[in-house]
Amino acid sequence: MNTFKNTAIVFFLLMVNLAFACDACKLQQPKVTRDFTHGVGPRGDFDWIIVAVIAVLTIFTFVYSLKYLVKPGEKNQDHIKNSILN
View 1 (spheres, one colour):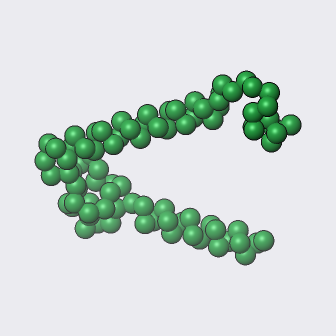
View 2: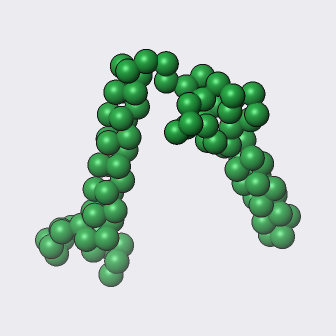
């Protein structure tokens, strides 16, 4: 079990390192996305519109996933969740 824990720690540390942009990519990015994105950044206005739409969809999805995780609203006694909770 200890080996698994150590392997998991090393794996996640490496993944965190890969998640941040390298020095070459930082030079190609605009100031907003400089520290956490690889490759070239958005080049024109249409690219920024796409980024904004994706950001709004991501926030919308995150908010609703938290909402239904915390308070799902299902009150039916024979719902499948009750077979797990009881």
